[in-house]
Amino acid sequence: RVVVSGGTHGNEYTGVWVLQRLQLRSAELAEQHPSIAIETLFANPPAHAANRRFIDDDLNRQFSAATLADTTASSFEAGRAKAIAADMGPKGAAADAAVCIDMHTTTANMGCTVIVSSYSTLALRAAAFVHTHWDDADEASPPLPLRVMVEECSQCEAAHLASVARHGIEIEVGPTPQSLLRADVVASTERCLRLLLRYLELHYSGAEPATPATLPVYVSLGKVPFVDGADADGALPGAVVAASLQDRDFAPLRAGEALFEALDGSLVPYDGSLGEVVHPVFINEAAYY
Amino acid sequence: RVVVSGGTHGNEYTGVWVLQRLQLRSAELAEQHPSIAIETLFANPPAHAANRRFIDDDLNRQFSAATLADTTASSFEAGRAKAIAADMGPKGAAADAAVCIDMHTTTANMGCTVIVSSYSTLALRAAAFVHTHWDDADEASPPLPLRVMVEECSQCEAAHLASVARHGIEIEVGPTPQSLLRADVVASTERCLRLLLRYLELHYSGAEPATPATLPVYVSLGKVPFVDGADADGALPGAVVAASLQDRDFAPLRAGEALFEALDGSLVPYDGSLGEVVHPVFINEAAYY
Image (cartoon, rainbow over all chains, first blue to last red; front, side):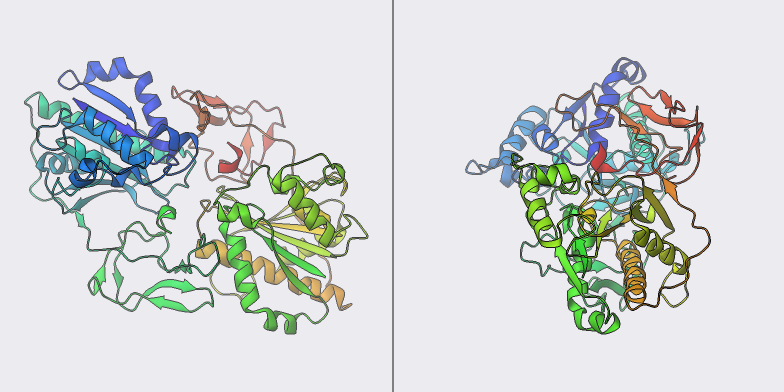
């Protein structure tokens, strides 16, 4: 049982759109993937209807074992997470859903990033398969660049929706504004999804493809928060991402190079605290202000 | 009296940010522009605090003479428009504010577009001045492309905020997601604003600069609405802007070329109803879904 989910963040339209396209093609998909049962999950319809990331709390932070077990949490998303876990779970190796593929977008220039967790070797192999076949000529139009990111965490601690299934994979595509559909972002999301499903079909039919000897991946080192804003309501950040850094996701950033431009025009350099050279991602993601 | 406004749409952060930067530099600005009194207007603070385009109704559609005179309109923005008109107006040639420059952003790839109305020759001259000096080497970093758009309407009919002053000018910069600041979009907005204020200083000090013999402009022909969506809540449009059209604002589009891609993947061509060759703008603007 493979669950493809979208709309976990209600203002990320691409996943919701791709779900509708999957449903149109469900017979064809079933025929192409006889060894897996593909289901779709529209994760947060009320947030989507409100055109917001979430109603009360980020749904994609509600799935740690501790949060799922917390019966006192009363937010809409805490309850929604428990309902999803009851259907796909119980969270972990015994989960009813073998795989969850959750589709996201970002305002950052991240191309198509497959995000997997270190606890799942199946997810890592699936990401390697996508990486190997990303530029195959059988697909239409040149895709956005493909990268693999690995989050180092246990499944128990992992708080994102996809972690409920035995194996979780996130597709993160950008740049795209929130509340908008771009044909290139839709196409890259669908290309990634097609390759993941092809891998899973091979895997579950017993025809496991050869895994490449090495796979270049990016690993999270930490977060650099946005500078707080000075306006009374706090909607604006206190600084703009430096022009020299904007859109340079996955490119090297060295200590001393510009990180932010403050309101008065002064540049705030990267202080080297996460390493002398880092490769920033989610640069200027609107949801992280 | 020259009013620079921003935050007319609450989720267009650039204008609000630039207003804060203008306030920081108000003494310097006053010194550089002795012939004009520059004021700032944060047009819709409640919508900005809510991180929405508007609370009840689009504020930038509330300023026609008829709407301003309608005492039965009860939306928040209808009231806010009357308050702004009472301060800058009365709308028209006798308005207290000589000029209003209103700052906007778009998710479309429109570069920096100066939007003026055909009723104001001063606004047209100011736009020509910006066009002439856009690539002057005294400014830092290469700017986004600059174009001039002319709306053909009477001041009485004009419904946008800037139309309240004797002369109204809109600065529209993109692409940028809503609810986000990009350094390049901020820089182009500020470059445009600097040139407009320089022109107004010259004009009101009696040193009217020579106007170029010709000025290339774009004129609105009409609107092509987004296809309605099929999802129950209506948040998604019913089609994606065709990949071949996305980001091609101001480039020619011919009858028969692709306009949209429907949910089933079929392409919907442009039907030629606005002319055999048109130059689309506001392509995939999120607020127009």
